Image 1 (spheres, rainbow, N blue to C red):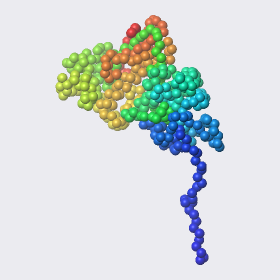
Image 2 (image 1 turned 90 degrees about the horizontal axis):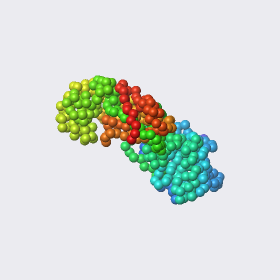
Image 3 (image 1 turned 30 degrees about the vertical axis):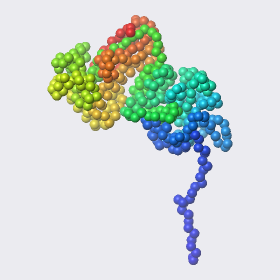
Image 4 (image 1 turned 60 degrees about the horizontal axis):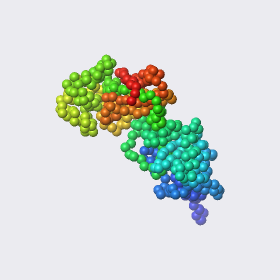
Amino acid sequence: MSGKNPKRQSPHRRRPRKAPEAPRRPHEVGGQELPQGSLDAGGAAGQNREAGSEDRSSPYRDPGEDGDTSPFTFPGSGAPAVDPQGHLTRPYRFLTALDLSSAVAFCEWIRQQANQPLGFAVGPGEALGFANHDIGWHVSLDQNDPAGAIVRSNLWPLLWSSESPLLIVQDASAFSSLSLDFPLIGDVALLRRATGHISSATPSWPSPADKAYDAFVSHAHWERGAPQFYKQVAVPRARQKAALPRQGTPWRLVYQDLLLRVIAHYTREPTLVAAFMDGEDPVGKIANILDLDEEAAYSALLWAAIGFDSVFLEGKPEIAQILLSDGLTGLRGVCERKFSVLAMSVIQQREDYIRNREMKTWYGQRIPWNLSIADMILRRYLMTAEEILDIVCVSFFQDAPLWVGSIEEEKIGMAMAARSIRVRGTCSGSRLDWQSVLEDVAPLGGPLSVPLAPTVIWGE
């Protein structure tokens, strides 16, 4: 042939027909796909939204499809918002309830979430945020505003009813002013602590709706590796702390030398174990061995139990001041000779930490890898002591006549390092009615290899 064959167009050069784009909405992420597992403690909900894209001065109006101008279209019918890989299948929406119609729409939406997981957050003033995989709401409870009054009158009765959503928050300790006596099933701060994913960064969110969305997605991500302690103890204890105090007969459970009992359990140091099994004062016994006063002996024991770490002393000047007066080099030598089992235990914990690249507490909470040996060991001791007290407190949670309040120390310092720790509460009834119950529940935080030996005291 003399003529040239026409070039075949490569399929790779064809330009597919472009689907018409939906109009950009001021409260949407913009339809982009969120990377799987991208929600971390850095406020990822806010990072995945276009900068400067939201307008809080007016409520968002969803233009809908085919020219539908109805104010809101609720998700729930059609394809799910998230595919099995965790990617968004349609644009996420952040809505703000600022007028009467949007407030009514929010109340209708929140009723649809009965017994469903829902992210929840509190913002400045009287602002609240709610979010799930489909939609996030920023609402106000301002009684002076008609929309806020509608939200308040409908929301609080619902949250205290059997049809309440199941709330997931960033940190339940921030809700003490609300008296959260409604279903709380997730706390991201506690979850990250239990799984060893602790971050020193303080997240920042543009609005309560973003914060609620971050809590909702982050919780789903980290929950897979959570120990049973998180759901069975940590979350119920968070609800318990936020509950309203009750009037009644005051009582106290006193735990003496709880931290030393934990150290005795982990290290099997014979001097400590024998003292606790025989009901003796362990600090007095150690003071006699080291020829120190009791305060110096207690500090020396803590120092030995974390491996004679000098950085630990720099961070605890009150302990360093006590020990420096006795000469650290000579004191360390005496401790290593007198408490050789304890010293060997520290070496064993160090080897386990390096080999496994993590350490666990007695009830399975994980301690992250990026810590010094002394910090890891101390955190293991303190977290285990906290676990014991939390289990005791949660054991009372289902008993309506009993209310558990604060945990207090005899002296200021490391929370669980005080020699005497008290769990306070009240009960409806007399001492004769509850004495045996308190005595039965008080030691439930074990079992350690040494007894907890708590004491029940009545009155303030």
